[in-house]
Image (cartoon, rainbow, N blue to C red):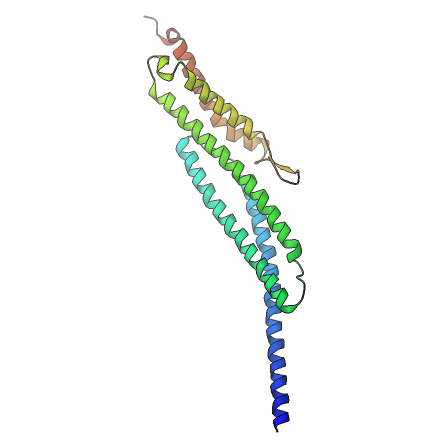
Length: 225
């Protein structure tokens, strides 16, 4: 009876071990699939960033709103990346327990890191453009609204020159692609998208230039009596 009981116990233990291994295998496959899905989600976020996050805002306030929306968008991408990393770490633990090799984690991790690097570089460029646009709009709006009587109020036109320089720098930046570590390049949107994004910058630069000309030649704006 004791031998039978021992054999029964051993059989039950083996069943439990196999059941645990089966559960771990299911978990492993699920983690691998979800990690691959996280990479796809992150790729879609990168694609959306490049294709739809293009506008620079018509004024300083709108551009600040766009900047805040972008930061929230980056938070979503960061959560997606962290989720993928956690899943891949789980696959490593499960593989060690099962004494097996992962079907995809060896490929998924480099893909996840590559897409995340591309996303962060693209995001940094987007932030730089928006912050430059905020600086441009804020300075331009201030100088257009103050309407000084004498150009000396603007340090002998230096502020006009600085605003124009920032605007030109921003327009030039819109034509430059994001360059990734592998040497590939990506532009934000299409050429027409970029032209549309630059339109309000050009319009405001024209207003600033006109204001500068008026202050340099006040007689040109004085009506004839």
